[in-house]
Image (cartoon, rainbow, N blue to C red; front, side, top):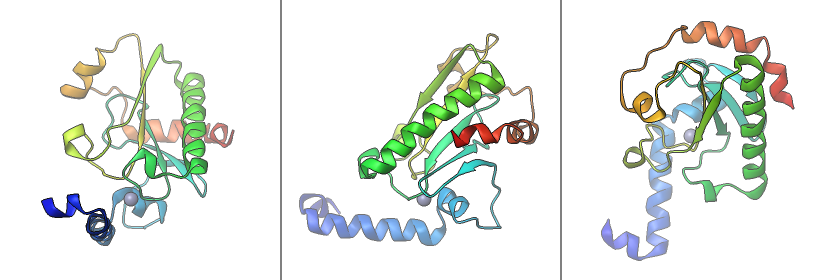
Length: 168
Ligand SMILES: [Zn+2]
């Protein structure tokens, strides 16, 4: 395995094999993108490049994630078009949350490349987390028990009523 990192061609094979393995088991976001009926979906928006969905293990009420439709791990694996679409959708998500949730602040971020960076899903995604006056600091929220004041299904139903805003 170490040797494969020294030889780009074998490394590419290793990466591809790994990715196929991931897809065989079923990457959660790919399954959502492919509308797999056996997976819980809380999608607010989807087009051919990008989707916006609820984080089903939210750090805070209204925690959304913006996800490219194509399975990539790293930001620089996206084409420029996909990257532009992703960032445009992050912007629309910010606008959406500002209007619907009226947060005082937000955290926006990516954990890339797996558990070392705190990512539980390899498929690239951008977290958009609204923050309210009564919140703890972000580190406290991410590092400790989550305290939610609204069940996620209720937030989802509330957000669905305004989901047209995400069309831009
Ligand atoms: Zn995927």
